[in-house]
Image (cartoon, rainbow, N blue to C red; front, side):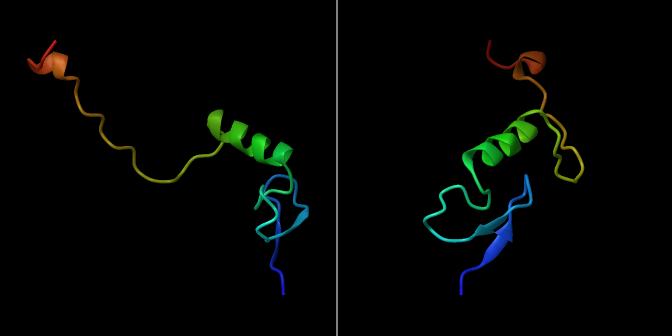
Length: 63
């Protein structure tokens, strides 16, 4: 039996098979829409921001 999932972008049912090179998406278009949303920072992963290490220039590092 083939697993069927919903496309994260449009909700269309998608067969989870090796022949579907866009899985879990239904198409290249839905895949690109999702990638664009990540690039535009519309999605965020929960958690605490980490401290950014100071630049070495500020603390006598190599120039």
